[in-house]
Each structure stands twice: as C-alpha cells, then as structure tokens.
Amino acid sequence: MSDNPTPESRPAPATWRIILAAILDFFTAFIVFGYLVARFTGNLTESGFALSGTPALVLFALIALYFILGVKLFGGTLWQRLLRANRRR
Image (cartoon, rainbow, N blue to C red):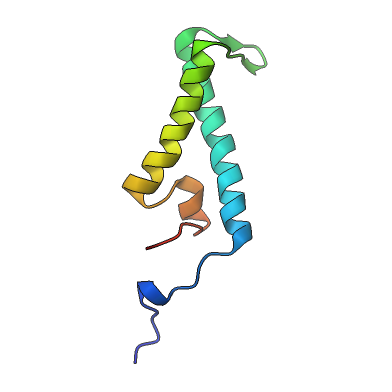
C-alpha cells in the first residue's frame, strides 16, 4: 500500500484553521472590495473609505460573491487555500 492518503481518507481540517480562514477572508474581501467600490463611487476619505446606501449594498454583495464563487469555482477562497482549510469532497 502507498503511504499517500487518498482524497477520501484525508482528515478534515482543524476547526481553528476554518475559523481563521473565514475571518481573514472576510477582512481581506472587505478591505479590497471596499476600496474598489469607494474608488469607483467617489467615497474615498483621507482615513480610508466611507460607504453607505447603495455602495454599501454593492460591497456586501461582492463579499458574498467572493465566498460563493471562491468555493464553487476555485475549490476554496484565498485564505482557505493558503491555510489548507478547505473541505475537499
């Protein structure tokens, strides 16, 4: 028998990795998408960005899409892949 585990026999990632990846993914998406939305809508401030109303809704829609498409298309989000916290089927 081979020492390499098959995909079915790999252990699930540690819970702390999954939680840390989710937190880091949210903050990364919030900062990147928030800056981009603020830049395109003229909501940049000297201390960062300030979004309200429609731009804020666009930001949260982009964050949701980041998580959905990251998992479905790429097998995991940025931090899930870096921390090896994505659950493989």
